Image (cartoon, rainbow, N blue to C red; front, side, top):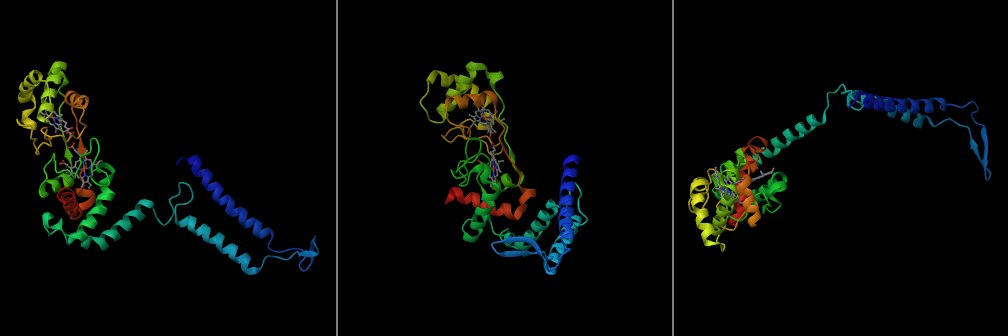
Length: 291
Ligand code: HEC
Ligand code: HEC
């Protein structure tokens, strides 16, 4: 916060406390106790009496409390407060308390193999909540993904679908590297190889173009996508011999990816969630495609 707005807040806050106090102080007693103010409303007269004592002191206590509060907590602009309280600190403390309380709950599942955990209703309910909180933003509430974010329910895995592989994906994250082939292949080459990719996917294609594309595919693509287009989980290279596309199924899109490459990134969660929770999540992700 700039020192100008900090000063403004301090001035406004302390100024109003002072104003409250002055209003109270100046009205604490009257010069004419027991007399009327002279105001008369339909025969009802207004007496010029001071505030009841309990009310007056109630106000004083509130003002003193307010000053104490502003000294202890950060309420006055940039002044951090004498108590050292911060929002981040409070969040951390409550997270620690939660970890202490729920930690054992998650830890008990760590010894259960992922493929058994899939059948544990309580664990899967936990997994569902973890998924909603940490994964749904990218993979969708149901795990069905969207363009650039893989569908986790279709059984088509870029990085492998075994319990171990899925767990590694979530723990360490993944960085896909599809190079840009535009410069090497030129327009004609991109057209040909895209034709062959469509053939791999089982579409009707121009045979001559696809044959030319196959040569280039063997040369440039087979190392990662494999000669039969079945993909390579070690590299996150997707299978191209099916109609499951991460980046869209149109010819235009396929050519665009071949020309410019793609670098999809799955963030790592080891630090943020710890192995206990990732273990449960791996089972939950498995359950999305197997049940
Ligand atoms: C910031 C977005 C983002 C978040 C959050 C995210 N992911 Fe991912 N995830 C991705 C992307 C992008 C990929 C694909 C990476 C690539 O291009 O290969 C991916 C890939 C994966 C894969 C591999 C899929 C395959 O086909 O092999 C799994 C499994 C996965 N995520 C699970 C999770 C889980 C579980 C969570 C929550 C703990 C999560 N993701 C959170 C973006 C995200
Ligand atoms: C170095 C390994 C590597 C090579 C070589 C390679 N690719 Fe890829 N390719 C990948 C990876 C990894 C991805 C996934 C990118 C991502 O998830 O962001 C990918 C993605 C794709 C996709 C998108 C698939 C989808 O589901 O949307 C197409 C199409 C593709 N590659 C075609 C090709 C063609 C054609 C060639 C040869 C000209 C080629 N690739 C060469 C690694 C490679």
